[in-house]
Amino acid sequence: MPAISLSALRSRRFPVGVLSLAFIALGAVTLGMLAFRDRLDKGHVALIYLLVVLGASARGGRSVGLPVSVTAFLLFNWLFLAPYYTLVIADPLDWLVLLTFLLTSVVAAELLDRQRRQAEAARARAGELDRLATLGAETLDAARAEQALSAIGDVIRQTVGVDRCELFVWERDRGELRRIAVSDAEGAAEPTRADTTELLKYVASKAVRLTEREDGTVHVAEASMDEEPSVDQTGRAFAIALSARGETVGALRVSGRRAFALSSDQWRVLTALAYYAALAMYRLRLEHAEETTEALRRADRLKDALLASVSHDLRTPLTTIKGIAHEIVSEGHARAGVIEEEADRLSKLVDGLLEMSQLDAGAVSVNPEFNTVDDLVGAALQRAETVLRGHPIETRIADDEMIVGRFDFSHALRIVVNLLENAAKYSPPDAPITLTAERRNGRVELAVSDRGPGVPPSERERIFEPFYRLPGGRPDVRGAGLGLSIARRLALVQGGDVTATDRDGGGSVFVLSLPAVEPPPE
Ligand code: ADP
Image (cartoon, rainbow, N blue to C red):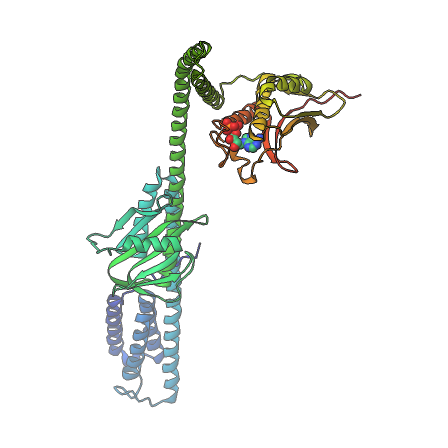
């Protein structure tokens, strides 16, 4: 954050009061000394005048100290150095006295002034740090980021000394800027340009700085928030983009009833305070994200509940329809076979939906036990026998040892059968299918390889999403797009996974990995 100096922020008015007092004091001591002129030495006069000059410089700074010392110099010469009432000096040594006096008083006035300025700057800086610290604490403490933003708007307006400060938050999803806080000086009804929001949108999206000039033109400058402007510009309004953690989060606009200039010190303070506004907006964004996530979670829970109850209610009528269609077919009405087929498809879909919602709700029981891969492969080939008909099947189980894993047998069986069914479904009728099993890196890996169309690399994760089917598939190959997502979920609940890769020479390989059990040492 840039250093902050407010010394230049307070407009310095000429201290007329102190100057008048200093001249009154000068007149008084002059009159006093005139009364005793015969008894006073030049040294006394010089010292008394010096006291007045020092007092004046200490109270009023250089602008009072210098005129007082020049006047004292002239009075000294005119009234106290012979010949009197003329600026002529008879004794050359008196020149020395007079010049020494002038030099001493000017140097003293200068030193006092410098010290006074330093003290003032230190006070201002301490005050500003105090304000920044308070602002920081307020930003963090405010119950909601909106509250922090309106406090920051007030502080910016007062500290920078402008009539109005407006803060706009950048709503990424809608691509819009929304005014979230405005702080107005009393009675400040500054007319806003019709295109203000558009201008600010430009400021926020391009992260630039903008000056709205009095003649209605705008001036845009490339600038980061920390950068000082190269020249002081005058305008009716200034706007900067607000960014936090590398993201543009909004825009800030300060404006006045009349045109005004922002000094580089004012810019520095503005950008330092603007950083707090940017942080508060970032916090606002996080708060919104959290609220959206919560709303999505609620909607998701509702969807699961709805899905579960609808699927449940659909099952019974579907079974009835299937039963009746079957009877009609067996009575010789072959066309009713379509009804049976469709009802079958629908009930599979309903089963899939029910299973998905149960898996998502964590309501599926898992019983991992020691099982051999031989048993799993045998059961799967038997279960998928009908669908695999026509496809040459090659089975390879690596190792002479028995491969043992710890998994839920029925869930694993469902997965392997599903992979075999897909291999048969998506490859040409006579294409060979290979089922291999091996132990690798402490896991049992069962791979189903086919010579089908394969899955493009960009789709290899998406096919595991519910209802996703590869575009451009054969229209006669039907499915709901639930098989693989159920398979992966069933694998994950028992510490396994299902992945897809391509196969050398064409086709795809789907691998089910499950926790293996190490063979006992020889
Ligand atoms: P379904 O088979 O019911 O469409 P899945 O979840 O089993 O649903 O598969 C999702 C999609 O992945 C399929 O629609 C298909 O596009 C693709 N897919 C699955 N298995 C294979 C495979 N062996 N070869 C090519 N594509 C496949």
